[in-house]
Image 1 (cartoon, rainbow, N blue to C red):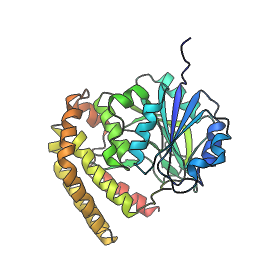
Image 2 (cartoon, rainbow, N blue to C red):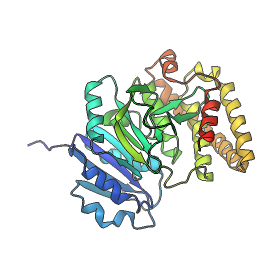
Image 3 (tube, helix red, strand yellow):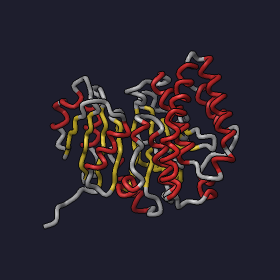
Image 4 (tube, rainbow, N blue to C red):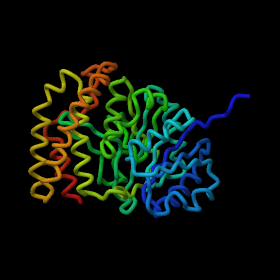
Length: 334
């Protein structure tokens, strides 16, 4: 008799997440679809996260993997993906609380839209539920990326399914064979921008991403690293540079290189005024030091490319002022 495998493998990464895990697990237990396994990978927590009694009291089919140190969001998810047995990989942050029909809506979207193989959820801010936390990711020709509809009123925005560039990995679903075929997350990223890089590589392989507004999670956000922290600035900008040089295909990389540099200069000036000039300089230097390895990866990524430059441009943001208008909107409504 052949073994029975679940349809979905949920990967939940924890790092000092003791205050979030019980609620997250309760939300998973309440899902209208229970054909899933749960793989919890603890990234070397120093609190009691991996030993909470609630982990094994929810009636969930759960496997706990404890890492001896914090290897980063990317490496922990890759480990979970290798252990997974489901057709679909569902990634969920410990501070993201899904509504009961979240998994059902993601699966239904996959069944009804077979041209798409990865999916992004509708994220609502947990503490201010009248505002969105994201509706899929936008990628700009400068190399910047941002969550669609971030901080916009949740009752009137992002209510329709649409193709987006990539999925925010706080609450996303990927076909497991595709995730593994492109190598999963780049573990050198450690954290930040790894989901955009993964989405870009899936795009290059000819895959498409769908935003599913019916699949709702309530997201605390930046629970581990803090918003605007030096940690997030360093890894965010370093990894943004790496993604541009690794994934942007020729001839687009040459067309948009000056836009990339101009954008870095703009945000260097902004962060300098905010007292984080040294941090972004470290990020740029870190990106430069890692560039030889990134260019080696580029050869592998681009060699297997299936999508054309024109196909990629159709799903990228191309307005030269759009990143700055997005930046102003976010700071005006903070």
